[in-house]
Amino acid sequence: MKTNTLKQKLSQGIPCMGTFIRINAMTTEIVGLAGWDFVVFDMEHGVHSVSDLVAMKYAAASVGLSTVVRVPEPAPIHVMRALDAGAEGVQVPQIRTIEQVKAVTEAARYAPLGDRGSCSYTTGAQYSLTPFAEHMRTSNQEVLTVLHVENVETADMIDEILEVPGIDVIFCGPWDMSQSLGIPGQSTDPRVKNVIKKVAKAVTAKGVFMGMHIEDPSQVPEWLDAGVTYITCGTDAGMLAKYAKRTMDENRAVIEKWTAAKK
Image 1 (spheres, rainbow, N blue to C red):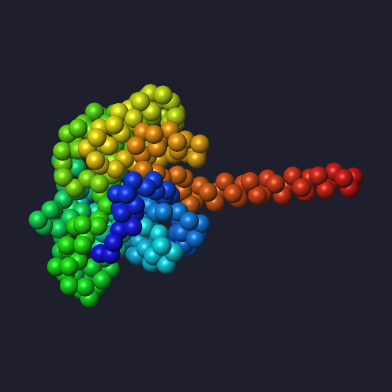
Image 2 (cartoon, helix red, strand yellow; image 1 turned 45 degrees about the vertical axis):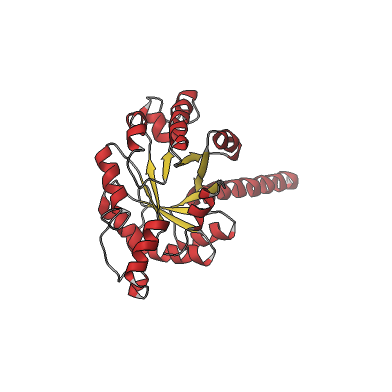
């Protein structure tokens, strides 16, 4: 596995911006050309297959984007398949138990650091053209393992979670956290922020990277102050929808003004 640029930047204390990909390789390429640091191929809320991951990974590589896959659920098989498809990192949602934490972190690395299934004939292993011992060593070193803490119960377990080896990033999703607090959709409510900031304090104290999803660039300074450096914002589908709506509204207003002037 080549040097993970995203992990390298995070290790240097550089805040990195990413977005979720729910469409395809073409939008992946566009995001890269627009200058984003990384993309998260979304298999939790998106409709991607494993074969889609390979095509999107190649598109990302062509424009210098780092790639992370958000798997559908905290199951080791999903972690292994995402990494075999060539992703540089894996992001695991809906963590509820320490057993799940141990299972998915171990699935992300080969022995002796974990128990990832071994196969040299995969995209991630360069189809056996890289010596497998070298692939195992570099993968264990370069892979980025991101775990979601997105409910109050898991937030309360953060100190215990951080004792598990192999965690690179703890990621908080404010939407799910708001639902867990009984205030669904109120992602910027102070109660949501307080829980996430407590998590961030514990995470950064352990030297683990802190991740956060934001809705608007105006929120970035507050979360940088809290120690967040792995930042996601929006989705390719959402950005397309907003731009399409804004562009149509602007053009419709011009047409209506022209029509009124002709009457």
